[in-house]
Length: 398
Image (cartoon, rainbow, N blue to C red):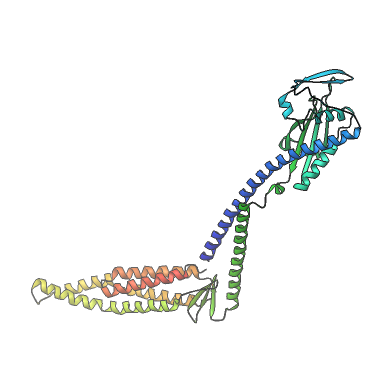
């Protein structure tokens, strides 16, 4: 389960990282696309406006002519209307803000407006149609502000998708006539997804990686579920489930989500029991060995054959009380029996088994600290090693 969770977490983290990268790349790509779309929109508006103004002016059937004074640069323009004669200084900045050449097309726009036939709606419709042909999902609006010469009023007209008339959708304000009385503000709102350049190589690579990771995750989870179902279908009377684990009491193996773990719990437990019996057998002869060694040591030190038997008996009693391990051995055997009974049940016994391993370790440590014998010490080391192996195999059992 831990291995499955680790792989799953690593996989999900990789998907999150790649997904964030895709979102960032998508956002940057769309922003660049919007900047390009705005430039295209302004250029398209210039061409459409000039075409429509020329067409509508030609429809008036009005005669007009333009001339020049041998390349002489003019600094002023004059216009005559029923309100009188008017003059404006040619402003290079305003000329640069012209939607089209003001000295030629601007005159036509002024005349159309004078006769009340300026084609604001036609310009907006044709502009929107061309933008939709290129991008799709485009909303366009135009706002015209006219300040007629000699009149103290300001005329305002708007057309198109007027709901998008806001500063964030502003494409700029442009002059339409040569006398600078007509100012047109263009607005456009382009759908985010239509701004994305799906042919961008970085975006394509990141999207492919994300799709591969998602597909791989789906296959991995499906495979794990299949293993789990397959394992559940193969359960027999000789097998017992401990949460995610399945114990085979015949083969003494532990299976976890389709992966067989080398367990041999009963064999290891039998090994611990044999070592415990060896300690029990060895501990019964420790007292006799101690008496013989004690008498020999006293004789060697005192240089005499006469030994106080009473004093020897007192020392033996003290030593026997300190080094006796029979109680620990008895409890250890009891724990082994309880362990064997638990693994043959079909209940959730993981915590109980872990507790028994702790108790068996405690008794083994006590035996090791009491026994003043090399053979018993070696047996204690063997038992602790085997208990640790058993503990590692049952620590995740529920």
